[in-house]
Length: 185
Image 1: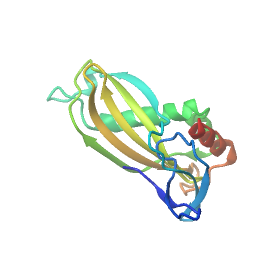
Image 2 (image 1 turned 45 degrees about the horizontal axis):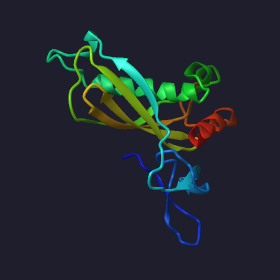
Image 3 (image 1 turned 30 degrees about the vertical axis):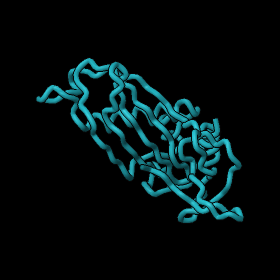
């Protein structure tokens, strides 16, 4: 889910996996997708992911008449994870908006595996999976540590747009370099 593949330019012509599951322990390669650059690395077994974890306690208002977490809340919680990833990269949405950039979702998916209930303590795991100067993608898992259950898995793709015009724009180096560094850690 959420993988962006590109052909490696090496002689073996193997597939390289673009920012998939972080680690970045191999030699970086460049590839193209729709004219936008992807930083790519060879897929590696056992690669460690760049994962941001945020704890959240289910509030009563997060539940529905069936006394389980309403499905729309998981999409909101994906945003909590995404914003925390940006924060850890040294970027705030407020700063981006003040500079004239917004980060709307263009794709979202979620697979619901088991229900959360009032007062559950959950962990939102956010993993960046792709980065170009015009878009970024993330995968998510919402977990309940008390029993090890995975409640939801998901994916989003966001594009960088002008706050004024709403058109897709290339992210300036000020932000792109911070995101690239965060993915290299």
